[in-house]
Amino acid sequence: MLMSRAELRLALTAGLANGFASMSAVPFGMYMPLAVLAVCTGTYGGSLELGRQRLLGSALGSLLLLISFHGLQGLPFPLAIALTLAALRLLGGWLGLQVGYKVGGIIVVMGWLVHDQQLESWIALRLFWTALGILLALLSLRLFWPTRALATALSSYSRFLEQLRETLIALAERLDSSPSSRTSPSPIPAPLTPERFRALRVQLVALRRQRPALAIELGSNPLRHPAYRLMLNLDDTASRLITSCTGMLRHSPPTGLDAALVERVHRSEAELLHQLVQRLALWQEHLQPTTHSHSLPKPPGQPLAPPITWIALVNDLNDGDVNGASLERLERIAVRLVLCRQAWQAISDGERQWNSILRG
Image (cartoon, rainbow, N blue to C red; front, side, top):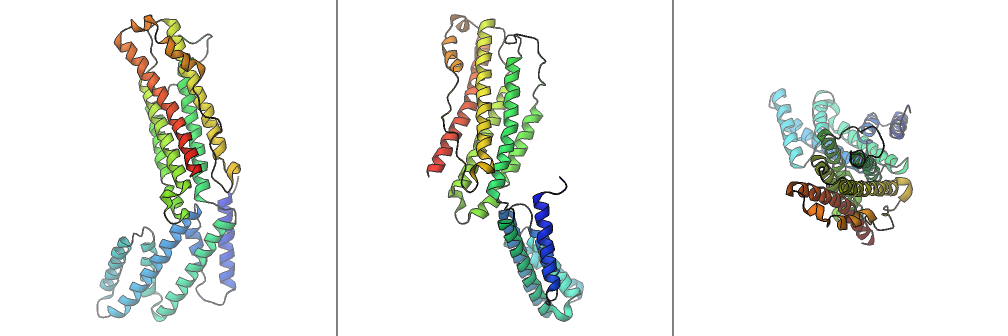
């Protein structure tokens, strides 16, 4: 694909802004497409925040430029402009600007060096074109191939769940390919490594960075909005699954007991993990934008229930041979079962909370 939808939308919007500014008799129209290029990125919520900061930074820089240009005439030029930029940085930090103060600094420098003969008109026209460009960028994100933070976040979590599914499959294959449970020769899957789980945590942290843009889109009191609570629920479920999977990696499957019993334990764990893999596939399907369009996605309809072999495993563990095993081996079995249970409980609690959010 030579050009994505976002890139095509940006090119068309910037071209439309440039054409409108060129045909207009109002000077300094170049600031309109520049504002579009600076703001029309990412999602609607992120662009709204970028536009707010750019507009506020432009207004702050213009105000400080007017004050310093007329009030610091008696000072040497380098000292006057340095004091103005320092004041801009202090006030920008106090207002919580992250990118807007850079635009304000450009206004201060250009206004003092280039447009000192037409300062007032240049400032007014620049603010006008900047505001118009920001408005056009937001309209394009809202109306032309809309890019909303909620849809982007849901799609990102859907892709992340695919990686969790692959991890659970790899953990299940470790059990299926163990000597006690392997019925026919088959290649042993590549071992899981701690680096894989660290990469999952890094990606989960990256997903959390999408929350500010979502909060901006949701308006006032976003923390109580169902969409924001759903994101928190998905994050909590994913975090708990990563923790359980990391524990399974550290605690290898138990060996050294009765071969038939170990095979039953491994088979029960593997079937539970495969069931969780299938359940996460349903989550992915429900989180796809095509399935929920303008409403929040719904969780799977049927409640999650453990497989029959997992329930029957409780009776197997009451076997006298197991009770006669060493304490260390019994602890290894118990730890594995607890970790599998935690993974199952994470998805079960996530679906219960998901239903609760939709019911309000």
